[in-house]
Length: 588
Image (cartoon, rainbow, N blue to C red; front, side):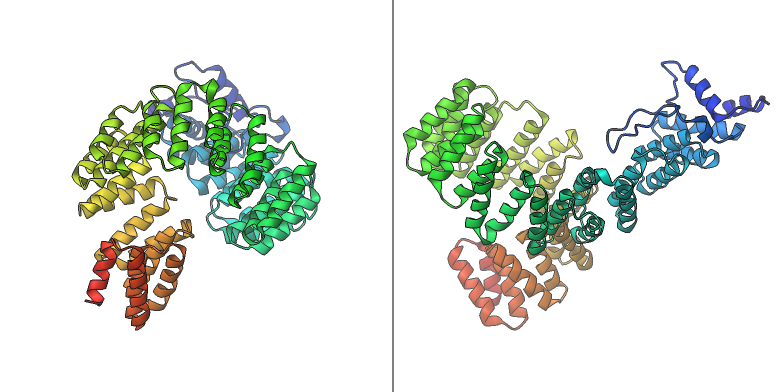
């Protein structure tokens, strides 16, 4: 097809401007073969809202339409129609570079964005800005792309230009930066550039709040408190800094945190968001009557909110007022029907450890939106009682409607089989699910874990590597793969790299800390190993972590401490077979 088009063009000796070609192409479109000269609006990133044709004539370059240029333009559009995004983006960029036409530069930016190539997209947006500096939105999109692409210094410089060009809207710009900054993996690095951007805008509360949020992410609480208080001083009526300051204070001075929330509510009683935080804080500090009163007030403001009614009922239960709890719940759920009442009464009975009563109420939920969650609670209770066969039978009666519910039911079935030691059956269930949803992260993870149990290490590794490609921020995928390699004592260097990556993604996870510490042990880095394993054990005194910590201490020569760690853990977990196995190797 392309050869035929080019030969037809070669017969023409006419010279057109690109404006004429764009208009002719638009007029010549048919529903079946139309070329998208004016690209559709983008909604994934910042909208590409500038009109494609309505550009001042004075800004358009005087470029002759050669057969080669027209061929490249059509090639780009046809390639895009046929799904070859890379070819479309590359060719469109070439045409835009040659012509310097802002409409074609815009089209190149859109195609580059659709291609998923970050570097090419950044280059295309820069070209668009060069050809038409009047489009205000382009620098903002470019800044965002640079930040998402990890080019922090360039992103800082571009954002600085955006802020300088529109200082009256600096608050809105910082709020637009917020989701990009908090999602960036390296919080320390992004905090540094945001502080540099915020420095020239000391009177912008949003800038201080953004710095405070990022300071929280890097555990710099003094900086976070300082910045959030500046934000609050600048905008005393704003909920957000009050909520963050109270959340920060609750760790070190819970009474002051409560006082802060109470004071704000005295001036802004309509703020349900702050009132909910206040009620939860009261509950956390076991001030049950005060918490009950606050949740009750919230429930009156939102009479159809079952979750609030349930909170009131649970606190009534804590106050030993079971009749009051049931009355609260029945009154709030009356509009939802009997099934809703039965479901939440089941939850109340679970809360007071009346499993028989909970089972009775859950079984009574027959239809409606609570049937599926009630069945899942019923199954979980049966599982805890060791009634796996009955639990699986109940699962067949679960009314899973959505794809998410069907996947959840499938994974629960596999978990029930695993609990019964039927790993082959569990794997077959998960394998069938992967046939229908091959890229579903939780399915991939669960199947990999069961394959590992079956000692099908090649299959497990393949599934985990696929999961990492599908969901690169899935910390436990890196951890599971790395830990499996460590346990098998293969590819130790890669294994340590994998678990360290997991720790970057989830720095407070004790299980991942344990994997990293174990990796250091396998690498012979005993000092680093003991330090990391102590940190993991302090966060979660799990017997498996105790086994690893004791082994690292033993290798370091601290045999008495190792034995003490093992013995203390065994007293707390007398049924831990892994811990017993470790102790048997070292203390026969």
